[in-house]
Length: 536
View 1 (cartoon, rainbow, N blue to C red):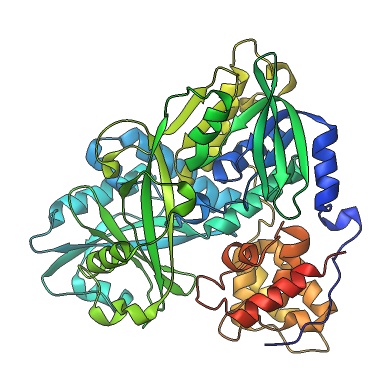
View 2: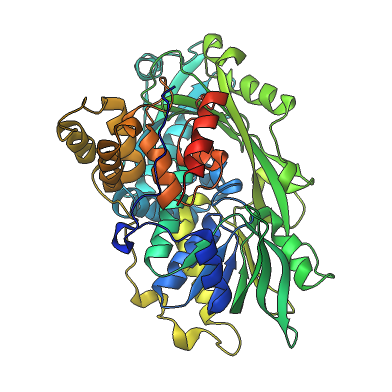
């Protein structure tokens, strides 16, 4: 590993987009009265903060951990219409999901999402026949206006050319359809950046220690900065509880007698090295309702997911041996044994889906958004799915506008008057960005490696040029963080100064892909911690 010299915090001029210090942000949060305080920095809270700031409200957003540090970076990394919803007749829902998926991947964040072809194998004795699945994928593609081609059925031999590890024993046919894929942590961070660009003030690693009340109404929160123990508070006209799996915990701060509003379902995933290239994903039916995915993602293979009710502390959610065995066993329905060796596993992660309260199998529960108003006037929102994060943000804003007494309506622009498809920062054609990075490399030094150029283009869009300039100015930052990963040290410095990274895990797990590749070694972690400590 390279020995890094001290690299000072970059971009001291406001125009450079550098971040204020945590002390400056705390001071700003403490001095003002905000229209809306959003507690919870998962994608639901982030999207709401983004839309609220766009509407003209004065917005603060805080999270006890890192942005997208829990459920929002533990998804299946998909933007999808929801093929399984067709079984329940939810045609309108699938069409709405497709609209949002296409909007995000084509117009809002084409630099952060990419199309992915899915193969749905039909095995002898499986839960569905070829005719049924063929009709299903045709209908699914029709609901997306055939924007990803026409769903159809192909032969096992043709499918195996794109997925060489596909198991062909008793394979009758393969149905084909299209959806999209993303890096969820990067998408969330870019949405945080969009919220800040629109005027929101944000702070991660700031935990709520109590709520503030004025005449029985929730009017803010007391917080503690976990990086140095500083205590401070935020005052707001309205508080939104968007804490995901912890939503009922915060509701009990408002009202100790508040009844549970949600239930939790755990979803686990495994990340493995690929033995051969994959040019398509597998979506294999396990039973009538469940599908197991095998997705080429970040040069790796992502397997999952499980779906079981979870009643423990959300902070303790983890992948168990039983989860690992289940994922590998289910993957073996359609994947050859050599690709499923435990020696290939580089990382595993688990997240919690927030579902409406009630009985029944969690795998059959609808991924609905739950909105409740507490006795102190705090609005709590939870649930939903990644694909519709923009729609959820708009829905919450419409709810805020319609609250009794209309406390915020006069100060906010109605959602129907705002641009419906505002792009996220860095929007650009990633192929063009990668080409420019390769062509416009540093004159005195070596040109950027193709895999690094591609990685930067598809994770930052046009903001990749800022990282390239940083690497040119500080040649030691142009070196790879690990020889087997595309990331360079300039990304760590950029995460420190522009992306709210406070800890090594913030960088290794969510700003880069080093952890999921199994490359967050002690030496790498030590280097990251050193660079993070070199702040002004």
